Length: 287
Image (cartoon, rainbow, N blue to C red; front, side, top):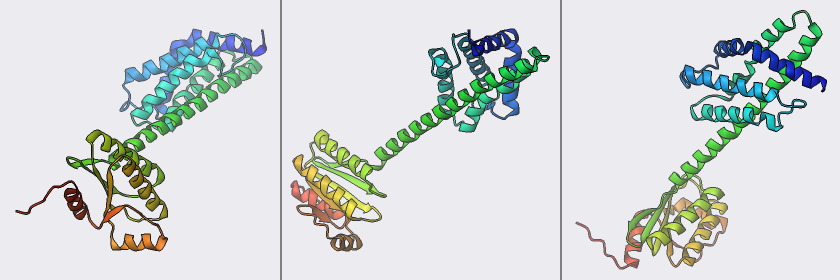
């Protein structure tokens, strides 16, 4: 049996002997450090989370060999910390709070190790060093999974916002329109194309109007995106009309030397709708 195995066994013995006291002192340390957010989690939830993690750590310490966070013995601990981090992200917690949740375990662990090894300074230092390694690595793991979960939430929100920013509206039987507002980058342009093509198939549209009145600027890249979208619409058997071409945007396109062959353009959404109605044989009459 290695020296570290002996130290792990010692930590297990201390945890088993002082489990309830360590749990209570850990909860108190969380309050002192400001990470016991009762507005996010109930007192019972916080205690259950802490108890589950402490019990999982105790079980992991009983494994054979040296401490390795990558080993199977520590998977239950990491799963718990990942779940807790996900809940903190969902409820508006911060990365600092999530990380300090596990780091505050150091204080009660050190205090109880001191009580058990008061007269054996060298052994005490070894145990404190090992427990510090374990808790620090768990803290780093918690930080990492918190960031991963938060990034995943941000990506989901961005995708949802992208969907909301590219709505396809059915104006009439055979006519769909997509009003664009804001910058048109490559990612959004791809989503515009996908949404329009799906709408053409689902609604059997003959004409698709893309209105760029709300697009602040048109550069070469934006113009190329529009041309590709128009070409894809034609391949689907429909006609593309680009509206909202202001004099400034028209001058910009000419200045850039961008050719837009076979693309019907109109200065306003109103004139684009009039063109679409005439194309499918509808007559719009005033009152």
